[in-house]
Image 1 (cartoon, rainbow, N blue to C red):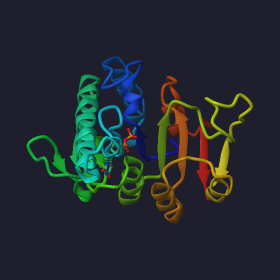
Image 2 (image 1 turned 120 degrees about the vertical axis):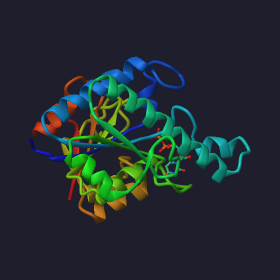
Image 3 (image 1 turned 45 degrees about the vertical axis):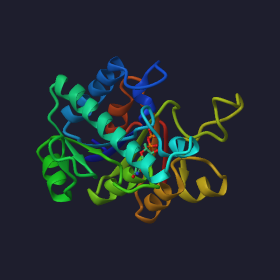
Length: 235
Ligand code: UDP
């Protein structure tokens, strides 16, 4: 396997499937199968999951809510998604642990780095819920932070598009895809890969990012096996 330890970032919206809100159980079990394929090959898998399918702090703030309060709700939403994904992985026969950045001890372990590493070494998938545990951050930043902390080889950002394009491929038909691009070129060209905090953290710590289509069956396994799927952002 090309990658021994990965950090998979899944957005909350990805869990909606064809729905407008919430969690699609079919999509969840499809993801569990994709993840299982990588685990079965001996790859250590950590996951950070978003919460946008349930609540985003910014949306709350624009509706008149206190931003910090909204962000707390958003972080709880990521815990709900983490538990849902854990359940789907359980059903697929994959051993998992959820670790939360906000203490919620009856429901999930607290985030403890050494413990997370031990789980990974034992072949358990570790799902990090609660983002970074701080308001004004995103789960992309949580993904970069956790990936660095656990010394993951790469962040795999699973999205609906199959990589990074010269412009938004859902809006512009002439957009072309990069197979690989440097951190510097992403910045120079003003392309959006992750939010600035997450991107800078990855760049400073020389952590490569691969953006790929998580909805295409077999893609995750291809990537960990070393096939050129999606777009790789490297130094
Ligand atoms: N959030 C936060 N701190 C974090 C991570 C997330 O406050 O470290 C909150 C924030 O309100 C965010 C919401 O949780 O809008 C859901 O996370 P995100 O928007 O990153 O989810 P995604 O877009 O990946 O579904």
